[in-house]
Image (tube, rainbow, N blue to C red; front, side, top):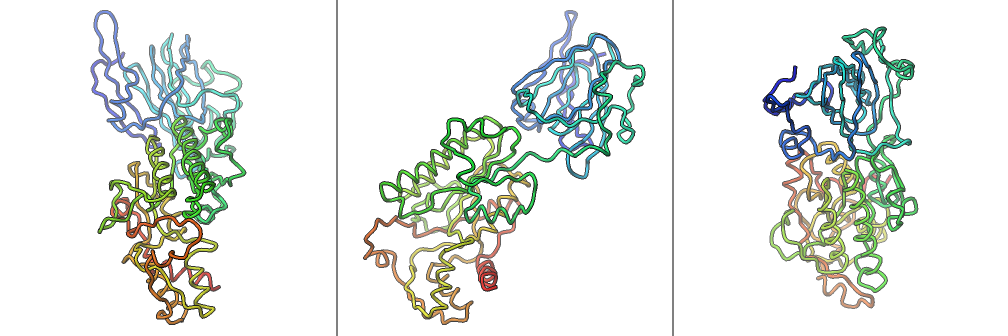
Length: 472
């Protein structure tokens, strides 16, 4: 019998993410009423905002009607409108809890949240049972299910009504045993900009992980009107936008300005739309160039933006677009060094050739190596701290470009005194092409990212490792 007036309550189960919910049901002589799904209240009680898009009902007129065990490629909110069922759930996802079983009864005063990849089955215990479920993807004939036999000996579901006496389909009886099932992989991560310096670092970070997909510019056209059909987007958990227009001086030219806005804003807006529509976490890499560098302290995530040049303006605009995505991480970084030609490799080459360079000394910041940036991105996607903006650079004492050049010279056994300081204005005085304004202070405060238990690498130590690896 349905229990009335229970408080809304959530209970964890041995299967991660599978939660049982007690629902308040209000009844009188006319019948009863309940709020079967109430987004605000349930999120406040710890249920993720799984964004349901379809409501399904399965009606079972006979006691013993048995359905499952099906692991579907979406999350489900399962409840009963009338009647009562015995439910069985088996974790069919990759990981240490594969094969874990949970069972309970569900009546109108109880519901259960079933995460993607957890096998779902039930048996009706009363006649005229209406089994209802909300899902966060539209049914599709292309959707890939994973099935487990109802009579699997390993799962050993204690069906109240023996399967030999139950109503079930021949198809459900023909499903494979647990030992023959390929576990459901996690939702995919799509990395854009796969051939860039950060993309290459992310390849190294994730190795051969089957659930991480890498796409270069030619693999996915963000300007295409068919972008929404380019992937089955509900299969993706996250998009990492490691692609960007980063030529800060070229962005000051007419052609460069168009390209910068196309890549850093228009393309990002397309990703944001896809991410918002499909519940995808969007990871977007931003820049210290969104600030004017006028502060005399490290910049925090909540400081007002004030970009000086076109590149910084496009990055700031891209940040604003991404911030509207419900699930987003914006990583502000600075002075990025990775595979390929960069400031450090240039200084190393000059040192080895005996060149005495003049290097800018009135811009202050910290180097960020792409392997540390890739490690930070992975940390955010696995630890899942609060969504929002995070600064992520190398740690330690800030330095000028000239200080870094001297450090490179010294680490390579050359005299650091061969590096001469020069002011930014003097350095670019003879330039014949447009020059982007640079922030003088690019130091970012790392308190917020460190509070997520991420260990920031010393920029000086990372520089030494980088030069050692380059010399091999």
